[in-house]
Length: 553
Ligand SMILES: *[C@@H]1O[C@H](CO)[C@@H](O)[C@H](O)[C@H]1NC(C)=O
Ligand SMILES: *[C@@H]1O[C@H](CO)[C@@H](O)[C@H](O)[C@H]1NC(C)=O
Ligand SMILES: *[C@@H]1O[C@H](CO)[C@@H](O)[C@H](O)[C@H]1NC(C)=O
Ligand SMILES: *[C@@H]1O[C@H](CO)[C@@H](O)[C@H](O)[C@H]1NC(C)=O
Ligand SMILES: *[C@@H]1O[C@H](CO)[C@@H](O)[C@H](O)[C@H]1NC(C)=O
Ligand SMILES: *[C@@H]1O[C@H](CO)[C@@H](O)[C@H](O)[C@H]1NC(C)=O
Ligand SMILES: *[C@@H]1O[C@H](CO)[C@@H](O)[C@H](O)[C@H]1NC(C)=O
Ligand SMILES: *[C@@H]1O[C@H](CO)[C@@H](O)[C@H](O)[C@H]1NC(C)=O
Ligand SMILES: *[C@@H]1O[C@H](CO)[C@@H](O)[C@H](O)[C@H]1NC(C)=O
Ligand SMILES: *[C@@H]1O[C@H](CO)[C@@H](O)[C@H](O)[C@H]1NC(C)=O
Ligand SMILES: *[C@@H]1O[C@H](CO)[C@@H](O)[C@H](O)[C@H]1NC(C)=O
Image (tube, rainbow, N blue to C red; front, top):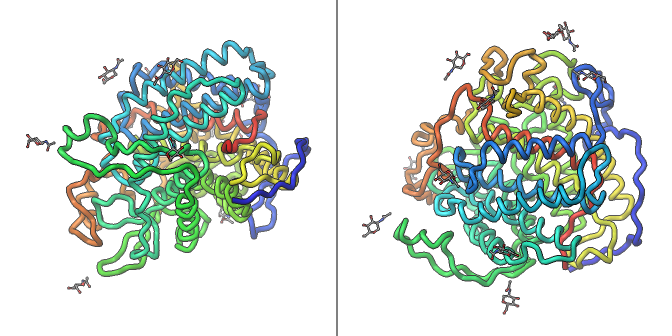
């Protein structure tokens, strides 16, 4: 337990010109040929917070009106359900921030406190309903990434309850705390002891039913879920190990009791720290600084010697929230520096710093024209999984950019308080991302069809084409294998489990679904709408005032 109580009880008012993003170890690169302004097609765009707040309310309303059926999102698979619920309850946090910072009267909007309150309550009822309808049996026996989306989901709900009740001095949602915490605990328990040093020196494998694959998403999630549990999990003594009352009859499996887990258990911090140290020690970054998908092992090898060079947008994002929370728990600013560097590389790989605008062939590694894309977006060949990726990136960027807490009296002993200089530096770096985030949010909104559904290929506007159909001529060959878009490869080498390194065949191989088939050419789905919500929510949060987040003591 440490306390670094150097800051005084006042908030620094942050004055900064449009700061230029810097990448550690690389000299400052200005906005490049596009300048530093807010760019969207003709070089201007709205950047008043209220504009984005209203857009966020609209995108969320569309997502829930069109795809939520009162119980869940029936067209999607389980891990994506967990992500959609995370975005839903995180949006409730954004709405709560509008009450805290503006008393509901966000400048430039028609919002009012009572209207925002009723939105918050409507959406929280949906999160409560999803608690009861989440198909926990299916995701319980899925892969190690799947389990961790569920952990992040319920930690986000716990954070919402805390911030809402702290502001209103109420006990709203408090009767959910124990059950939400128990679910986070059950799903964290799946991965809690899975950091394995015998192969590749550490890390988690993606799916214990397949040959070892140490992939970036599972391991980035392990940073974020471990440190999130360390900071925000309230403890749980409920030893019922079953994800649902029907699990035993559905599977015939008997599980040992769930060991109790206390709040702020040091094991959780250790897991996050050693995971990130290991991740950095492995060659996960390509020449552009982008995180590749992962590593297989050649037969009889114990080192991660077979890279899968595929890059996806979400792999650039999920560790950002973990790194921010690692700073909260340790005060070590190198974690923040690692995140700034990753963000710089990601923005650059959309062509933001380096390319001419209005050139739809100018592929920059992870997009073009400053707009983020996954490889499968333009040809409309994304699986449900990949349609969700961009929204995940922006959600974690958004979270990373929450203000750092400066008021020592409010921050519990187990976390650090930022100096005013550090908080100001973080705020100005995050402010420098705003033009790019807005540019992407505009691009996403520009893909809406007549029913307001956001499409998958945000870059379509620069090619003057519709995002509603496949555009194979704008496709770019991926740099590596793409093991996600073709489930059949999971039954072949190098994926299939033949007992290598202790893998256990018979477990679900791609657990989080029974998934509906990929609907080619329908590029408007709950996933693409959810990705749109991710970027528009980030634009709203980054352009409005919001309070710092910290665990309560
Ligand atoms: C261009 O800028 C004008 C004025 O700022 C704005 O009204 C218009 O919508 C913009 N057009 C596009 C395509 O962004
Ligand atoms: C939601 O959809 C599922 C699957 O189609 C269905 O089983 C369930 O009854 C629906 N719930 C409501 C409230 O309509
Ligand atoms: C929690 O309390 C509210 C009323 O305050 C009630 O509507 C809700 O059903 C309760 N939830 C649980 C899980 O008991
Ligand atoms: C779990 O039990 C311990 C020991 O009795 C107690 O201190 C702790 O408050 C309990 N935690 C919860 C969340 O009930
Ligand atoms: C569970 O066991 C019963 C009785 O042995 C059997 O009929 C049923 O098929 C089993 N269910 C599963 C999911 O294996
Ligand atoms: C930035 O992106 C461009 C492609 O747009 C690439 O050529 C360049 O190498 C990248 N810079 C760095 C430092 O990664
Ligand atoms: C791996 O090791 C086993 C046992 O030592 C050996 O039989 C096998 O030939 C090796 N495989 C390769 C591809 O080297
Ligand atoms: C984009 O490029 C085309 C052809 O190079 C040009 O005709 C058009 O005016 C440009 N549009 C913008 C918004 O710069
Ligand atoms: C918009 O896209 C959705 C999803 O593909 C579709 O159901 C809806 O009919 C479309 N709306 C219009 C006006 O084309
Ligand atoms: C896109 O369409 C607009 C309006 O039709 C036109 O002004 C512009 O030049 C086109 N841009 C490209 C790149 O074709
Ligand atoms: C998708 O659209 C393309 C071009 O419009 C068409 O050639 C292709 O057959 C469509 N694919 C499916 C699965 O409908």
